Length: 77
Image (cartoon, helix red, strand yellow):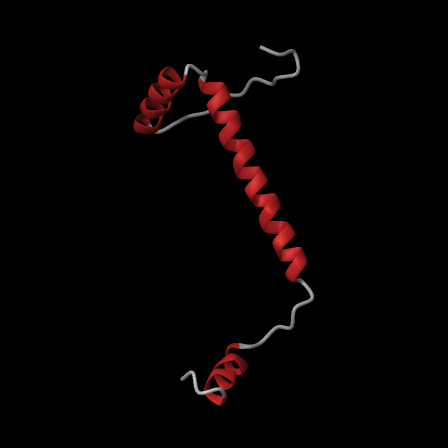
């Protein structure tokens, strides 16, 4: 274990813990490795979402009423 790691206690639901232990055995990885990978993936997904929001920040905003009026004007409803 790296000297840079931090120890933490995590409580899993029993079924999740059993599934995680089985996955660790089948993948020949530790529970810590699997949890770290899952957390990194979740944080990376959050970062991608934030970047997408940033990219779209300057797009025009339509109210629901304006959207419905536009759909009706173009024969979609």
